[in-house]
Image (tube, rainbow, N blue to C red; front, side, top):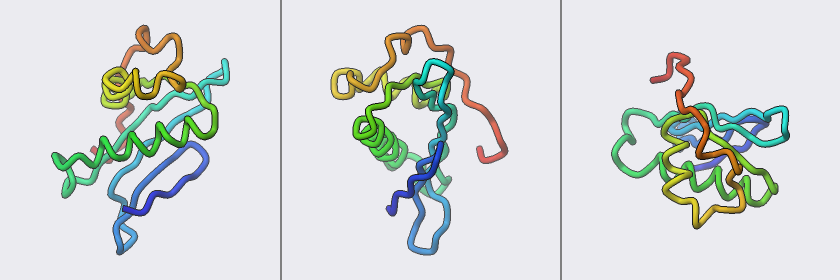
Length: 107
């Protein structure tokens, strides 16, 4: 999968350029990021694509020195499951974060 990095968005496309995975995030007032949405194309669901996408997001945040929370339920659970591996990117308030992914018609 080819990963693309834009302001507030990391996404993957297939060889035809079709959107296969996407994570969006916004900067909060305190400077931390909030992962507010994840998407995986129906053709890839159940194949580990969402986890690979979250690894790309976590590695990008690590490289950029960002700390994050996640209001997206999938991202929130994934970050908590990988908290030892990515402790330096997790907000101190990650455990308090209410998770409810925004819905924008891509689900």
